[in-house]
Length: 550
Image (tube, rainbow, N blue to C red):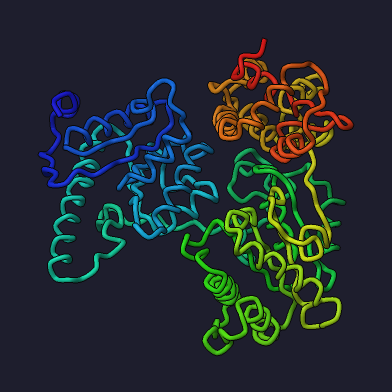
């Protein structure tokens, strides 16, 4: 502790650790995150606990993804440093997702400890982080003076928790899984949980604000946020969801606007006086996926609650019938008759279900069965399904029972020059065709990459020239995005080798059709006939460097 006390001489005496705990420190490798992470790392170790900090703990030659996974599973506490950079980091969000999933497991650990680093309470978090940190209290760090206070509070509660566990153990009582609701005190109330992007009309998605602040709002209007979705594109979606018994499939990779488009469809439904419910399959605890019955009961109860009607599951569930039949009967005999208007049911992040094969093999055919029922039973025509997903995983489902080959497919495509020019104009960037072409050469028509670049340039954080110089590096604007793809490919050696083939040549190349399809689903490549080539120079240059291709 001596080095730490040299920096923080006013540090209160820390409670001695009677039992060593393991801490995982999640941070971005740039200041102030980096310096603060090192301070916490040193203080935690000096207090007799174990600390993992990727930059300090992972040795040369070790595989980052495997080591990160191992440490997350072992840790008791997940110390999350939330700065402006880390709050938008894909890698940090993924670590929080894993920590939340582990926390919801049988061991109820790690305890998640979020610290806002120069990030005011008023600053919105992205939708995923808001969901993962729901009901988890947070602390605020604004200067080095806050470091010893936060550390002392953490260690004091840790010691208090150990004492409470001993008392509960001796009394024969089970410990509360919420033993550490993170540094609770009246002086620091819990951060109010932000509402999702769409909340049954409470959010004004039709704002006419056209200034830059409005554009960067967490809930901007569809015209401003995604002007590349032409009116005809929206009208096509709206026309489809008006059809009795409709099934709309929104397919696109991560960050291509699936959730946003789903929310616009739901918002349209609200304007038509339809009932709307959005179910995000990233939201439920891990235990929900333990069995089909548990999953479907959660599904039914969630929808009923969102519609503000009693779930009445006890009266409407007969175990002898099986879970799928019970769920169908629940919709047909109770839920749909209980509402007077059509119900648009948005199912977001359906890919999550793919990793639970036993549930997927029953639930996905159930959706197809409901779609088929609407052809003959009027009650089912009230249900309109909107399914958002990135890819059909290799789930062994008969094509005649799959929901992914019926209904109306909406596959979000790349932006074109006109779309990008229009978005630039909304951001008051009056670019010529050459500037648009330069950006497109680097990032293609990838919606998120384009939008992020234009927003940063409009904010005058960097120029187009500066962006292009460092874009295909981890120092650049897309560092987290690129590194995330690199980790995914490292975990899939065959795909990594296929990507090597793609970036080695300067034109289209023929690779295995299955691998080409997977790389295309990730939008790392695009087709040129039966051949493929990188989606854009960003991926070509980054992976050439990573793979040391001359």
